[in-house]
Length: 244
Image: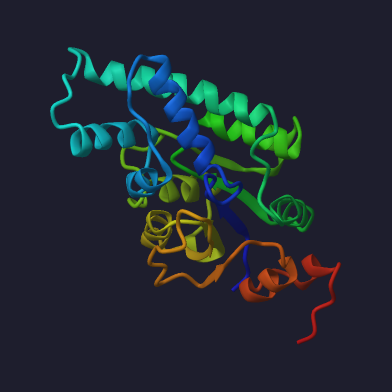
């Protein structure tokens, strides 16, 4: 297999973002006069639902059955999410959420070797843009041929829609690509699209079922090992010669 493209998830994969999201949700709730608070244990459960707006609705439905929903409930949820996104992006701009180990170098190596890169995520375009501008610089978009973000498809992960959208934009078959994910929902999404997938763990996903993944890593601190496992070109691992 000759790998022509790497497709990245964002939250938990490019950066350990989930606690940043959780704290930003709590700030949005407080700012809107709500006494809701998502602690780590609760957020761990809520993460089984992808998408911020969808997560808010799931929380209300499962934890607050007596909540008196406003007349325009969808607009209420949308506004909460907009406020949350503002707090989250402020945190990103302050440098509070760096890229995970090895990610910056992987992107640089792949770009230099002519491997196409893409994004497939349920998070908003604004979140992706701010994270990568801080992590990679103002010209971060030059590294990515397709940006599949947010509500661009009707069904979010674990549905494969976002991966099919990215594959279409790249003009590549699934067999020519690998995906990098961090969660069971993400893995199910990429596998359903026929893409060979590797997983990097984080605090919230260590207990997930990753059956079907081609490899599971704590992080990408050992890039040479990751390159060997994936079959990416040996020239990538020039900082650490690989012996076959």
